[in-house]
Length: 319
Image 1 (cartoon, rainbow, N blue to C red):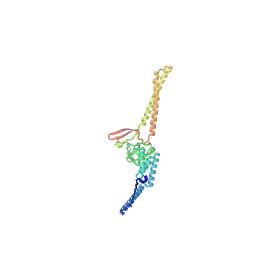
Image 2 (cartoon, rainbow, N blue to C red):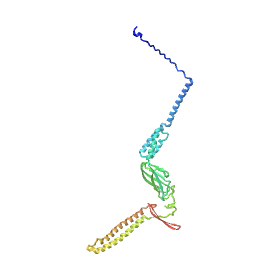
Image 3 (spheres, rainbow, N blue to C red):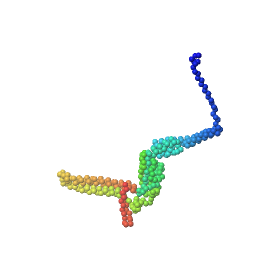
Image 4 (cartoon, rainbow, N blue to C red):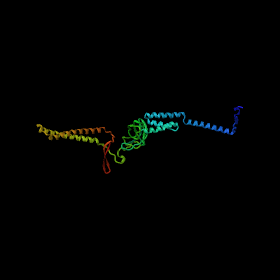
């Protein structure tokens, strides 16, 4: 027997038994089918709900509003940009667009300029019923003390009331300029609602009697001018008299001293100054009288009126 014949032998036996799964009961199979059906229905409804929340047409409209707002902002049309941004920031727009539009609204509101309009009548009393037009477009029906948002740039403003002539202003508004005060004054006495008030006295609101006013400042200038011309005439006459005396005495021998000539020179210089002041005074007063508006409330006015105890006089200056 060889060595190989004496080696131990190993025998391995493997057996595999495969048993089919036990069949499920009919009730379990029905439950699984029902659960799968409900899951499919839920997914279908969720998809339809998301599609209904942001239909394609509305998503396109929101995107266009966002694009328009950026173009309007670049062109300096801040009011139109704010309107577009407020529309694309509504809940029905997609979340991404809504988030961007909301942040852009804050940025535009920081740079959009605003102005506050204050209107008074000829007596200095407040007027509220004023229509405000900017570049021909009505932007405010009535003043309420609140700031008005505007586009940056130059604007032609027109303020209209029923009881007086319209007032116009040209203003330049810069980006981020807030609460720019625009003051205006109508040329007639008005009530708060903008209708004409029959009492046009500047002091009627305080109970003082009305008084007719006469411009004083032009006459003051003309009075100073007339007095200066009279002074010029006197100095000229006296100066020429002294000059003739000097010429007939020391002037013949050319021995006049500075002490003798100085008073005469001073009179001639003063006469020249008086002549200039007189011409300027009369000219200024005349121009002020000729160019003064009929209902001008500015300047110095004096008024007189009877009272129970006799009379009163009032001097008033408005500049």
